[in-house]
Length: 242
Image 1: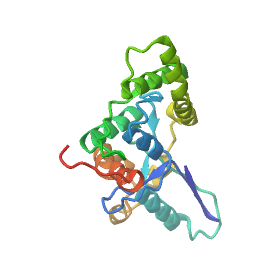
Image 2 (image 1 turned 135 degrees about the vertical axis):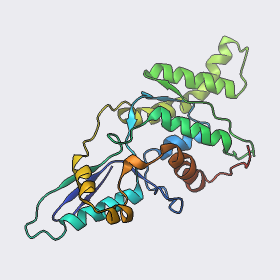
Image 3 (image 1 turned 120 degrees about the vertical axis):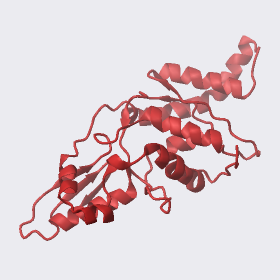
Image 4 (image 1 turned 90 degrees about the vertical axis):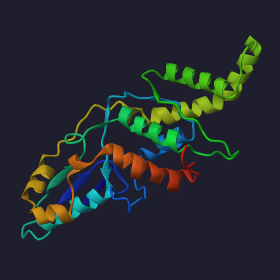
């Protein structure tokens, strides 16, 4: 969450990301990227989350436009006053975590990450858990599957669980860090931002687009946001036509 403050007004913004125009591919947020990063590399087959919870996403170019619109309205008032604006996607164009990971699956299934051995990383659809014990057990089962460990003795199972413990614990800590956000039920009121948009002329609306409700999330994540993560964060190669 970013906050922009001046002497006369305050603009409160939720999680912000790379612009919604193809020419703007820099990923400025740092909240969803680690989730996409680990998922794309095959390290996060499941997540501790409510798939129906809503994530608030705002492209960075809209953040800039909203800031400029607020400055234009309040920057030259003779008597300084505090004006609070929430630029949020929740009320107008809600996006669930299940949608987010479905888009991630669709992208990395078509354009898989290539690991250091030159192999394509296979991703599966995300699984969701509401208990850390079930999450940990599934991670351990996936590690056994990835390493092709079958028909082991009880002693061998204990041995490999000890070997995998560090990775399981690391992913548990990672998931616990995100848990408050992935189960968050709150919605942000954006009435002031809606009023600001209504007061803008048609010319201003075209020049300074701040209507989050017009975003097509499928196009945004598949054509802009996730490719930006692939190119600028993962630093991996996409396989054309796969």
